[in-house]
Structure formats: C-alpha cells, structure tokens
Image 1: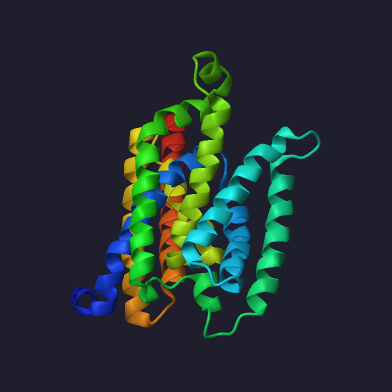
Image 2: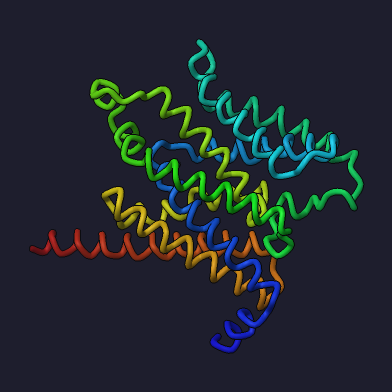
Length: 281
C-alpha cells in the first residue's frame, strides 16, 4: 500500500489532479451538510442531470463548456426553488419535469456533436485526470465563491432547515436565503462534473454528510466529520483509480459508499450493545 501511494504521488498526472479533486471534496463536504439538512438530495440529482442540457448548448453554440453549464444549472436550480410556489406543482414534481426535459434536450444536442468535440463518457462519469488549465481556473473560482457564501450563510441556513417559521419571525429573509441555497447547489453540481460526472455527482453531495449524520449532532461536528469522510474518500478513490485503472469519479463515490456502509454497521452495532446493556441493567 505504501509503495502504491508513493507511485501515486510520483505520477505527474495524479499530482496535477490531486489539488482540484481535494478542493472539490472540501466544497462538496461543506455543501453536503446543507443538502442533508434541507432534504435536497433529489434536487442534486435533478440539477446534475439537467446540466446535461447546458453542456449540450455549450457544445452546439461553441461556448465555453463549464461557464455555460454553470449558468444553466443555476437557472434550473432557481426555477426549482420558485416552482413549488405555483399552486399544484410540488418540489419533487418540478424537479422531475425539469430533470426529464433538460436531460432530453441535452441528449439531443450532444448526439449531434462529434466525438472530437466532446468527451461524453467524461461528462457522464467524470474524469478529473483530463482537467485542463481553463477548467482548473474555473474550478478555483467556483470553489472560492461557494465557500465564501457558505461561510456567510451557513448559520442562517441551519436555522431555516429546522424551524423556518421561527427563523422568519426573527427577521431572516427565508425566501431569499432559500433561493441562494438552491443557486449554490447548482454551482456545486457543476463543480463536481469533472470529478464524478453528471451521473455520480449526487453521491458527492449526499454521502459525506450521510456518513457524518450517524455520528455528529451540531453544525460544527457535522461539518468536520463530513469533511473528513469526503477528503479521505476522495484520496482513497484516486489511489484506487491509479492502482486498478478504474474511472476516478466512480472510484471516489465507491469509497464514500464504503464509508457509509461501515459507519452504519458500526453505529447499529453500538446501538444494539447499548440497548442490550440497558435491558440487562
């Protein structure tokens, strides 16, 4: 294992991809807590798949790939935030509508693109190893923006997640903060595309906090635990990707899934032991 890790660090391609991948892990771990607290797991699936239309538009019109996809993902996220306010349209129904329509549009647009113009497998499943300098700069910009907003709004979002009525009564602009959260989820989805692709992005935005939720209680503890799981899972997944020539995004998500299963099993074992001790006591 030590030799594999040394070879991993010695690889120029892996070294160049390591910083962007870990930065994505930090951002997604931080956003993951809010995604779980606000029950937005299905939203991340909808936005990630809908972003395929943004990528298709960029390819068709020869526009910058990630900036165009970012604008489209944020637009979809804001529409999903506003749609439940329309009578008769629930949030999950709105997500399904935009998910299906945008996905269909993206497939049609990308199907007309030549293989030399777009890496469809990389978009669907991610490939951080092929990140370009332009992509790297865009990821750094998005990461800085997301983390800055998250630092400023995290406490307010945490309050709204558990008692929106009290938060609004205390003077918090609940509707505006909700729109901001949805927009930030859209930005984070695009941030994940290079690592996990459209199909697996939801795993990066759900699994870190899902693991942390088994152990943490406060916002600070959940964030630290989510960050630990995300960074460790990303590093382990990249090492697996290098050692076994697996797709990088799938390897990272698989590692995070493994952490969740292990965490859940340990937590269940501790709970059973505690209940057993109480019954005997």
